[in-house]
Image (tube, rainbow, N blue to C red; front, side, top):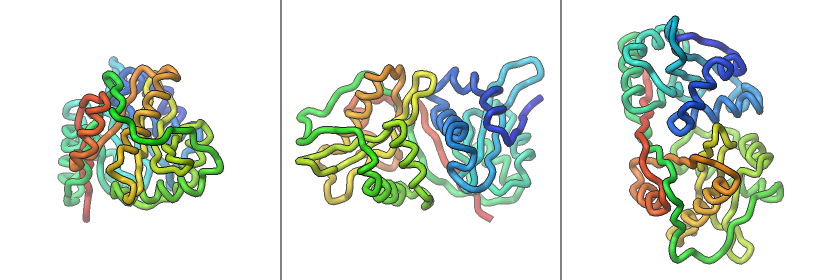
Amino acid sequence: MGWQITLSVDEFLATAGGFLRSRPVEHTILLTVATTLQIRGEHHFAEADPIFGWFATADGPVDGAFLHTPPYPLLLAAVPEDSAPQLAELLAGRKLPGVNGRTADADAFAGAWTRLTGAAIAPGLQSRLYRLDKLRPPVPSPAGAARVAGDGDRNLLVEWFHAFQRDIGEPARDVEDLVDDMLAYRGLRLWEVEGKPVAMAGTTRPEAGMVRVVAVYTPRDLRGRGYGGAVTTAVTRAALDAGAEDVVLFTDLANPTSNALYQRLGYRPVEDRSVVEFTA
């Protein structure tokens, strides 16, 4: 069988969902993106139609998966050995700005893609996936306390999400739907000092016992005071209290401060991922 493609997120999750949920930590991004598209609609992240796919042999189970939501890079959950060329051929007519996957998988696909299309490649974001071992709150804790963000915080959250995207180099996008979605499932928390929000952090919807910490942000003029660690601790504890078995997050490998912080809080490395960018 090899790689199969569908335009239906329902078909994708019906076929590949078991594979994704069998290793929810390693498959966290693709699992949560696909589930969000199923809940919020297939154009939640962009107007262009997404595509989905999985890899399986004739007699075997699914052991690879991908999705692509333009204009973002192709997102890989796994690429079985020697299957990257077939996937590149299936996607050859599609405009891909890059690929995002485990470093070995991203490199394998990028090599197949450039051989097939002649596209040049350039290194993009290098990230590390962490999984919580045992939560270790910062000592001493900074002043203030966490609270769940509500509709009254929407304007501030939209502003901070735009700033967060700029900080991490993510392409600009309309974040209003993202904020509204996270508010709907109470997925955002603010750290406040004397009633003033000074930092935010969010979590994804629980999937197969896994929750991912996302969008940890402190405005530049408030950094260095421990607010990021405090709000990360708050959302992590909330996920655990709600029954999460695995709490995970990603860091930029080029940012030693965040990598050190999350390890102090009890997060341990799982694997590295790479974005490889394609240029004409």
